[in-house]
Length: 159
Ligand code: 4NP
Image (cartoon, rainbow, N blue to C red; front, side, top):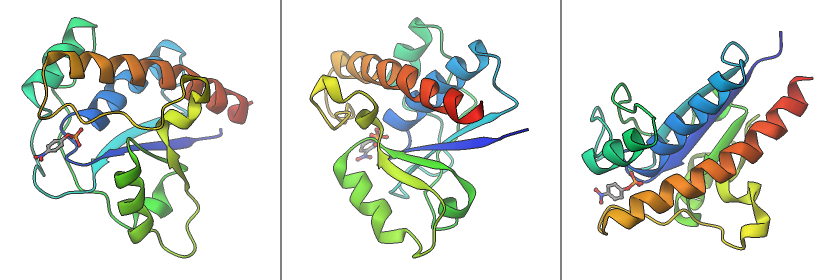
């Protein structure tokens, strides 16, 4: 049976990419595809390795029914390009960081997560870390919208 692996990447792996991880994981479960689509997240920075998602991230996600408490931060590594089919960055700086560790021969499709919703006219999921609560809500809004579009693409590939 076909199997696809998706890795979401931000800077710290405690705010945006864990949100994408938890939201997309739920979409996959709701679609009955958890045996065929594997989801993970990572950060380009090493600062928060081993930590749970930021409490504000967990709180905002929990209010929409997503449990992020089992996630632990890790750093993206070159080997991820051999393990994942899709590596999706939250912003252009993360994308540039990923390009710098991308092996010459990598099977992964590397891009920006928000490229799945071009009609939105924005490329980046803004970093909520130094801002207020509304930033965490915005992350959820953007990730839910792009997640739905990504799921449609993966469902096509799995047919
Ligand atoms: P994330 O947010 O990249 O969405 O996880 C950040 C988390 C931590 C820091 C910056 C952004 N930090 O500077 O520690």
